[in-house]
Image 1 (cartoon, helix red, strand yellow):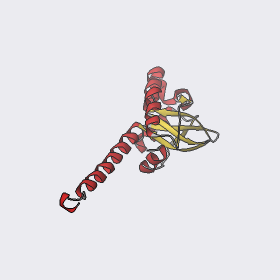
Image 2 (spheres, rainbow, N blue to C red; image 1 turned 180 degrees about the horizontal axis):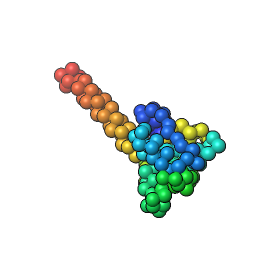
Image 3 (cartoon, rainbow, N blue to C red; image 1 turned 90 degrees about the horizontal axis):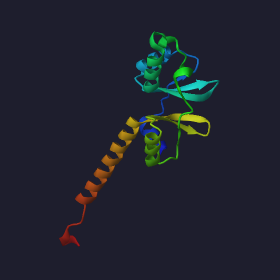
Image 4 (cartoon, rainbow, N blue to C red; image 1 turned 90 degrees about the vertical axis):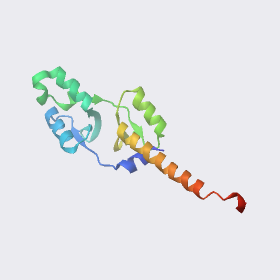
Length: 148
């Protein structure tokens, strides 16, 4: 299964934040949209990724002043990205190797979506469910021995 197929299952809704916004504004967006990551943009291009992990680290580091901390000071700079034609096994390998639960999906310099570990798990379940249905259908329609 390709990353493009995972995005098709998930949908291509994107949630972004500007790098100069505050961490409090970013957390508000993440909470309202029920998402674990925001792609960070500056002057029309992706410059980073903000996930709940970066929010927690920045909150612990900044203490009571966490709310006014700019997103650019908390975000993951230059995150590992996935390509549309990347195989799911390679995607999972990249996520595990780089300890990154969310990967932006890029087509050259165009952001196409974000794939999470959850999206990968859902895609695997759907793929296995489809294969199971196909195998059961094949077995059910297997010719009887007296028909051969």
